[in-house]
Every structure is written in C-alpha cells, then in structure tokens.
Image 1: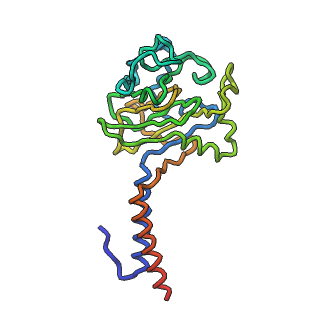
Image 2: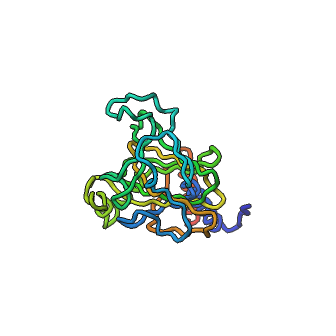
Length: 269
C-alpha cells in the first residue's frame, strides 16, 4: 500500500516509479532473445527436447504427433482444397519439406512451413500437453509473422516477429542475418532474415501451446526445456518486447505526467 509523505518531492518520486512499473507491466513479461548470425539452435545451457522434423516423412499434414507435442492446423480458417497455386494433393494442412533456400537448419534435413496464405489459413498450433516456461525455434526466410503463447486456452503473450526484423536493422552486423547461412543454399533468399529466437516466460506465467501465424511461415528446431533440466538463463541478444500503449493508457499516463510537471513547477516558486 502506498502511504503519502508530507514531502512533495517524495510523492513525485513515488508517482514516477508507479507510472514506470505500470508501463513495464503493459509491455509484457516474457523475455525474447536472438542468437548470433548463423546460430540455428539455442545456446542456453539445459536439457532440451528438440523437434527438427528430420525423421518425419516429407509431405502434407493436418495433425502431427511428436515427442515435443502435437501439431494441428487451424482448420476453422481453412475454406477447402483447390486454392489456385497450391499443390492439389494438399489436404489443407501444413507441409514438412526437405531443406531448400527457405529453410532446413544446416542446409539439410527437413523443416515445417504453413503453406497457406494468411487469407486462407490461420496457422499451426503446437500443443505441449504440459506447462512450459521456455520455447525456441529457428525462424528462416522471415516474414511478418506472429507467435501466440496460451495457457489453458487463454493467451498469455503475443509477439509480432517483425519486431525482430526491426531490431536486426539497427545492428551494425545486420547484413549477417539476411540470406540463407547454410551450404548449398548459402546467400539465397537474401532479402529475408534467418535467426534462432528464444522465448522465456516467468515461472508464474507458463504456457501449454504456441500458435504460429504467418504467410508461408518457415520454422525448424522447435525446442522446449526437458522436465529434468534446471531453469535457463537467457542467451543471445535480448530483443525489445514493448507493445504500443492502448489510447486510454497513454491518456492517463500523459495526464499524470502533466500533473507531476505542474507540481514541480509550483515547488520551484
């Protein structure tokens, strides 16, 4: 509980701290980090379960059960087969593909892609079957994608990955992230970024599923922490997770800052 002080300067400091904490909470509590260019798995130290799709037969799927969890396509957003430009053998699902210029860590093996345009399909949901506090994946041929973390059907964190692209563009080594880093495709798809992303949730806010939403979103090396592993420390470079303030919050914050400025002005007189 906040107890006002007779000293106006202390009251101002307390209000300032309260505003800062409120704004920080609005920004979300997950930590997002990005590994160095060319690194396609997490560098955090721990015991992991990794799905790299290499033992999965290439093809189209509507459901895929793996040790990491169960993958399902969002069929509610799918209007049916026969969409122009899509393989007619596609049953309306996602695709496990052999490595090519757009994905496949190490330039070999397989990766998974949501083959539906956003207008025809919402995305792929990976359900873990238990609470998790860490998830990482290799994001290749990056487009304006979104990952949504939920726990028992309630969204706990949503992240637009164009934030990563924007952050990469501020770095002095930004060019190192663009283009496929692996032979025999090295340098291909140069306009798009390739990076491994880590998502760390606080212990009191776990998640049990992650939803991949993007237009032809390519991913690989899906990673969770094994139950036997100790907690992780974030690895790589921390990427900002701030989200825009709702208009009403911005208005309230602005009003409070205005009040603080007025009090300070009066104190100087």
